[in-house]
Image (cartoon, rainbow, N blue to C red):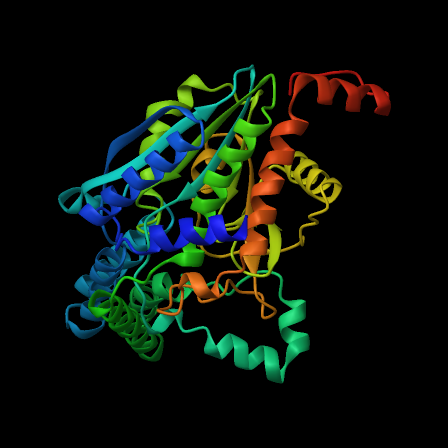
Length: 399
C-alpha cells in the first residue's frame, strides 16, 4: 500500500498547484480522476471565486500602519492605524475581506460521494500548495526543542503569529491617541516588519506541498478505495478536496455556500485530513488566528475513541493559531474533527518549506489517517451505533 500512496503523492506533487492557477485546476482534475478510479460516484469539479493570495492583502493593511506612523496630521495617523488594524483583523479572521473582490479569480473544488444513507460523513482535504517565505522557517522552533525541550513540551497551543500583524497598526492608532510616541513608533516598526515578510512571500516560490496537503489528498483517495472494497451501509460519505485553502479557506467557503444548506447538522459530521504526513497524528482541539475556537467536544471524544479502537491513537490537547478548512463548517454549526500531524517539536514537518517533498512524508502516518477515516465511517453505520448505544444502556438519539 505504501507504494500506491507514494505513487499518488509523487504524481500530485509533480503538478505546480498554486492557489487559483491553471495548476490548481490540473490538480483538481487529477484528484477527480483518481476518485473515479477508486469507485466514487457523482465526481465533479466545481468552480468557485477565490483570491490567489493572502499576503498582498495583509501587506496592504500593514502598509497603512507604516504610513500612519509616518504622516504628520494626528487625525490621519489614527485613521490609517485604525483602518490597518481593522482590515487586518477582518482579513486574517475570515470576515468580509473587502480587498479580495478585485483580486478574485477561479479556484476548483473536487466533490464526490460513496455510499447511501441518512448519516453523512464529510471528509475534507485540500489540493492547492502554499508559497514559502522566511516567516515559515521551522529552524527556530527546532532549536528551541533541542535546547529547551521542557518549554516545547508545555506549550500545547502554537504561537499567535497573527497577533503582531494586527497589533502593529493598532499600536500606531493607540499610541497616537494617547500621545505615546514610543508606542506609535513600536507599532510602525511592527507594521514594517509585517510588510517585509509579506513582500518576501510575494517573491518566493510555491513549494511541492507533499505534507501540506498532498498527504491529506492521498489519504482521501485511499479512503475512497477502502470504502469501495468494504462499504459502510447506511452512511453517505462526501469526499471534498478543496482549492484555495492556502489563501485562507476560500475554496471550502464556496463549497459551503453551495452545499451546506442541504445537510442536516444533526446527522452530518466532518473529518478534515490536514497535513497528516508527519510521524505523530494528532486530533486538534481547536483553532483560531485571533481568538481560539474549539471544535465540538462530543465529536472530538468520539473520533478519539474510534481511532484508539482502530489501533491508531491520536495525540490530544493541541490547538493551532493558524486556520484550516475546518473553521468554515465549524462556524456554520457542524461537528468537525481535524486530523493533523507533528514532528517532535510540535510542528508539521517541512511546513511551507521547499523541503516539503514526497520523500519527506511519513506514509505510515498517511495510511493511519485513511484508516481512521474508514473506522469513523463504519462507526456511523446505524447498526454499529445502535449496538454501541445498547451496550452502554443509553437511549438512542439522532444527534
